[in-house]
Image (tube, rainbow over all chains, first blue to last red; front, side, top):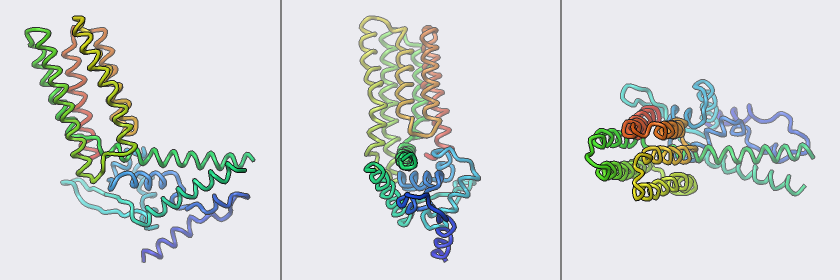
Amino acid sequence: MASAARSRAAGKDRPKKAAPGSSQAMRLDRVIHERLRLGIVSALAGAPTLTFTQLKGILGATDGNLSVHARRLEEAGYVACSKGHDGRVPKTEFRLTGGGRRALRRYLDHLQALIEATKTR
Amino acid sequence: MAQTAGLRDRAEDDLRFIRDAMGRAAAFTCVPGKGGIAMGAVGLAAAAVAARASSTREWLAIWAGAGVLAFEIGVFALLHKAARADHRPAGTSARRFALALLPPLVAGAALTAALSAAGSYAILPAVWLLLYGCAVVGAGVQSVPVVPAFGLSLVAVGLLALVLPERGDVLLGLGFGVGHVLTGLVVARRFGG
């Protein structure tokens, strides 16, 4: 189930057409390439868990936008979400999964490789 | 060629964005809300007691004691919150935080000694508020927006203290007391702890 969702997410975000001469860019993970999703994954790499409100404060995102992109990452298996209550207030907490941590590491490696490749040209 | 440069710029911008988001999250987990409220309570108590001080030496001793106590509360609350969040307060973000916070505080202590020796007590509230405001703005740049906003409000109150030195205790109570309590409430309510 989860892997099906992952494949679906990956498929949906796969670039249809890469810019000529940008083979490194083509390899970038499109799920976390989007700015807000990259922000969510990066913030969660800097703290063990963050609530929805905390993420909103860190990234300066709106409720709707954050909600949509967090769900996308959850579907891809990069972020795990747990819902609970803090007293009477509903609390949604996020953490980065092992897959998410690996994806961010890969993404960073690709960026580094891209920078190196374009420097030597 | 232009496309290559564009790709590199975007990749470098992405790296900066990632570092910034990680740093903000790490710095953010350490900002103590309840600790800030306790520091504010110390500031308010000091303002009330210092206003009744019988001598400038006593006045200075009250504020110096309150400053040390509030600093200790702040450090304890920061470490406690970081430990509770299972976050190790070390590394780049902690170093940046300390580097931004400590120099203005050391400068404040040195200026306090020099100005006290010269008998210029009236200017001390402005000096404390301005330097502490700069410290909070610098240390809070990577944190949630309410923290640097608090720092800027301290600078504004400090500037007011330069114009109204006779209202020093009221303005110190406003900056260190009310400011800390309000900021602490926002952090504790909206961002936990």
